[in-house]
Image 1 (cartoon, rainbow, N blue to C red):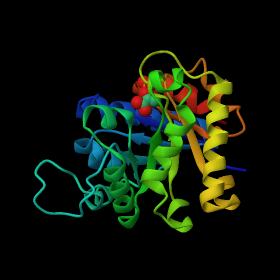
Image 2: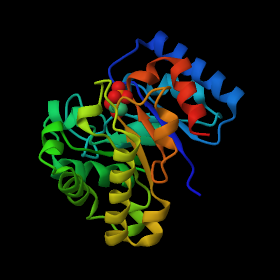
Image 3: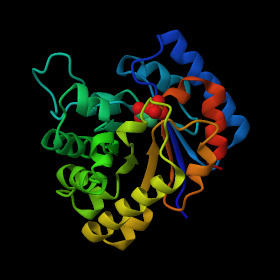
Image 4: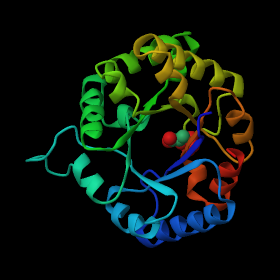
Length: 252
Ligand code: PEP
């Protein structure tokens, strides 16, 4: 059976003291709950080291929200996968729809980022998902298939097996309008089919595919009960420890 994962994407929220307070509250709650789910926090780059120190030795994992495709060098303002790893993070979110939409991140760039993350011993959390316009045009499956193809299909099965996938319909992110459980299940099952065709049945059966998009304490249980939904990538609701812990409980 696949382990469930609940990851909190804090985006550009929380000062350092606020982030440490939130991480400490989540850690406390996780210690009490001893959840079967894997729990991951993704604060801003600048807070990674401090949050890593707080989480050290605990079951809570740490993710960055982005990384450079380059190894090192004259790329002012960028942060490399190796730097992230050296700060104590083990995961990195790649291809979030906000980065695709606001920072022009496209398939070729994301392909490089995924390769770089894996070679730097970070686990990519690769986000895919269609816009509302694409869903209304019934293009959601083609879009998601394309996003997988352009960023992940160059890998061999061993490398691809390291990736955590996140289906995040853009129309559900931060909108309060989550995908219905059956819509999420339909897409997660489709993603698993694509992975099976490209990388084989074993990889497809063991891949973690998270749902993201207005997941909250009220809807998490129904989403996580779907057979192909292996937990969630949580934005807004991860900024409040009680809400996030309630979602973690739903993944048990
Ligand atoms: C996200 O940005 O990854 C996300 C899922 O956001 P929200 O939960 O706020 O919709």
